[in-house]
Image (cartoon, rainbow, N blue to C red):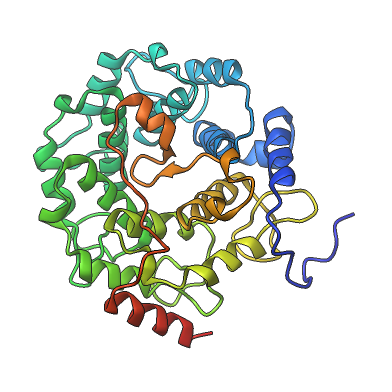
Length: 354
């Protein structure tokens, strides 16, 4: 039986083997609670699990992954969240990312998938998630990221796509889902990533102001939240650190406190990482927790650091995969460099909340 949910803070040791076993169990299980509740978004769940395994340097079943993705492909060129589901931009990107991890992009009909994505772009440059019409900057990122991986950026109006994302920028430097929507860390990653891929980041982003907004997301626990007055959550270790990495401002937060927060969210019984300490782990937070530790440079400090695969903060794929695909290398911020005066002030403000 599991211990009571309220327990002392867990070990600060990184539990590599437990996490690898947790991910392997997910791959093998067919009737677990987590498998059932993620059925509708299985394509993304497989991407999270295999990307997490890749960061750890752990093996996964490539043939099974490829066959699963092929089962999610539809006649319109897009991919659904599972077999026999309608195509959606979110799962189309996940499918492309999985096949990239497997070095199996030959199984994508690139022209058909690019045409599906292009068919979802509207006149203002925005993208719908599917044929039903929802518009969101998440889909702008998914479209540009998938097309960049496929080498089909010319299928859409990239300049108009970037201009729409720019219209979603707010007075505080952040970005929302649509013009006028509040700034949110998840949307900011999508917008910063989309602009980076489009080559329009400097044109549409105030890096100093956005860096301030992102650094203000650090809570007294050391974790990061998605917007003001919310609790810290491990997933924002990715959404915020990836953006700070692209902006080269990782040193604007207290990286040591964030590292401790992520490590405290490990499950020391069955492996995996949860949203916050003493909660139940899941594959979503496990991937983003591992990705966050990587962007903090944590694995580079370990004696067994060579076993880990660093992640690219723009494409959310291992850097060696991006290199194989010829995607532009985007270095994570150097957390060991001498901080700027602005960075020192931001870190001091974060530390003052401890």
